Length: 225
Image (cartoon, rainbow, N blue to C red; front, side):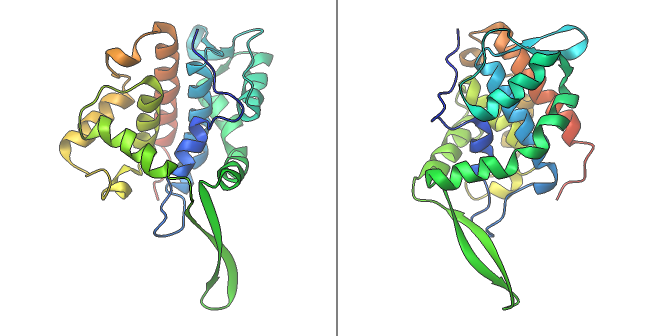
């Protein structure tokens, strides 16, 4: 059985939110963010064998096998009540995720918040890269898959697919060149073509690919920023 993330291990939702834009101090793709974060939570549940595919494209919780992480547990509890369509689950789970996920990243030191004034008058905060070096490591993992053609572990495949689905990959052009081969590989990952290394557990891979593709279907009908 796949090992679930420990409570002190970053979730896929944290990985996705960490891939913000430090130059602007903003989070990329805010208007599609809740679908992407919801997709990341469902993908994490699938990768940890906490999620099962049901009839008519629905997903449900694996009875008696809750995750230890609180964010994932909330989604598992929701699906334990009864199986749901993936897009229904995304709409229910995603909207509440941004703030608790951001708080985790700040607490870990992965992201810093700095005070800032707009027009010299209005106080706000901007996000800056933290002290842990985790953001460049994550981008290096995604780059190896999209640029170098490495076969991804399932977790990196899901991360890259969701990042691509969010429509924000072009914003990472300096780290991940926005070229035709990169675009093609990203689309392959969106379709669930993850390669042999990610195919060890067929059911988990199938459920995760279904979650990612359902997130993509939801995201594509929304306006991109």
